[in-house]
Length: 164
Image 1 (spheres, rainbow, N blue to C red):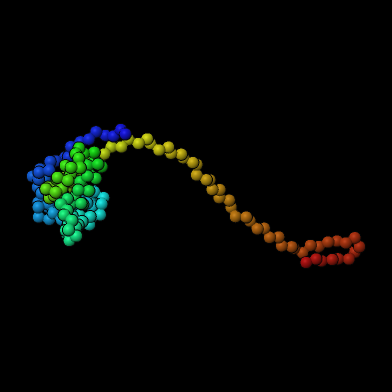
Image 2: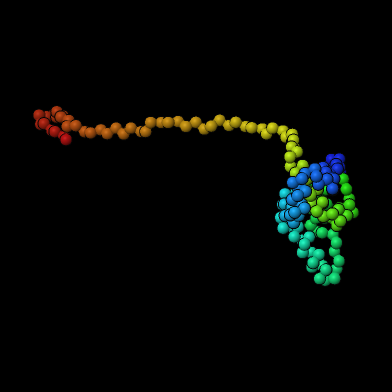
């Protein structure tokens, strides 16, 4: 399969000060940042709630879970969609040990991808111009009424006949 070459992330995992607004958003409101990233990536805005609910549910059943599933899945999907270098173990490490930085990095990546224009060369479509139907305006038919007028006929004999 021939694909485009793999690229690096637009910013590093700990490059928070490249985009101070994203850094503050992630630090003070990380759950909202996670929901924003999920929505902008085309997934459900509520998907990051799995990162909060899943560890609680698994812990209640006695199963330890350290990898946040939403952060990990969106990170891996983003790498796959945008052709970013990396591996699943690196995604697991970033999601487990620095989940806030991971969400900030994904947010910066989406912002970078949205502002970069994509040029697509497409052949121009063939346009067929068909002549429009001609409409002939014909005058309405004229009704000629013929009224009979009295006619005088002369019979061969000397009688006069009037027809009305």
